[in-house]
Amino acid sequence: MNYPIFAFGLPHGSEWLWIALIVILLFGAEKLPKLARGLGKSLGEFKKAKDEFEKEIRSAATTPDPKLEEGKPVVPPPGAGVNPTDDLTKKS
Image 1 (cartoon, rainbow, N blue to C red):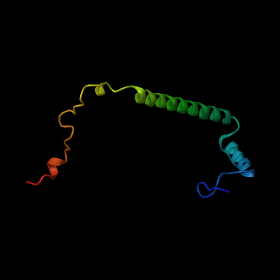
Image 2 (image 1 turned 135 degrees about the vertical axis):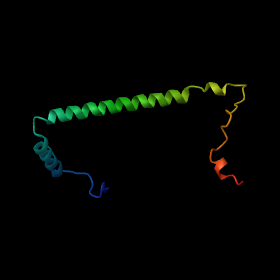
Image 3 (image 1 turned 45 degrees about the vertical axis):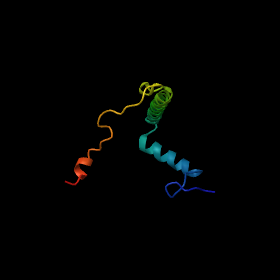
Image 4 (image 1 turned 180 degrees about the vertical axis):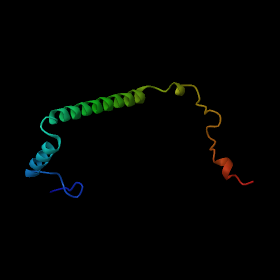
């Protein structure tokens, strides 16, 4: 079954040939290796940033919160439960 993407579907068969031909005509044969190298570097940087983000999330999820030590009650800071819009909505 063909699942449409952007109402046209993915290119297949000879459509890839036309796309490649248009890219060569637009950028020229000399610039294609530079373009591919830049795209590869960009994808590598994106993957590295994604891995660092996931590592940071995992470490935050496994690190215990020092505020929640056993035996000590959790006390909210002053004004934590006060909504600043409460003063505006109060009837005088």
